[in-house]
Image (cartoon, rainbow, N blue to C red; front, side, top):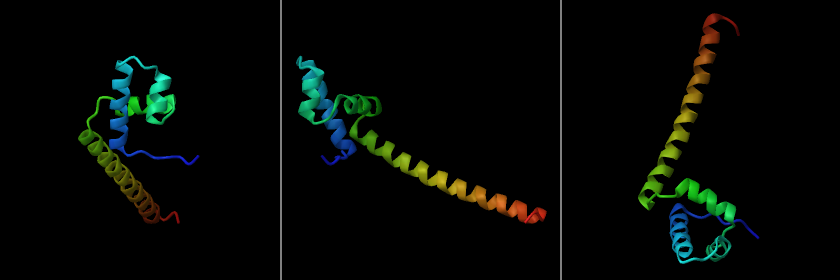
Amino acid sequence: MPRKRFAAEEIINKLREAEVRLAKGETMAQVCKQIGVVEQTFYRWRRAYGGLRIDQVRRLKHLEQENSRLRYVVADLTLDKRILQESAAGNF
């Protein structure tokens, strides 16, 4: 069975649906089967996205991408700086 990746909006909607079903008295196994994920995935989603709105999730994803890009830039500049320091010291 191929693995399906859900978008953040889909995850939020599935979490809301699960909360409604749980409030109606269904078991966790029934709810997870109904939304199409295993319990472990549900708990992981709830820990990561619980209580967030869709616009907040979009902003979070955008910030994570920007953070990743900035980390790459800093690592690249640090490497350049070390190369220049070694060449200036004559240790090449």
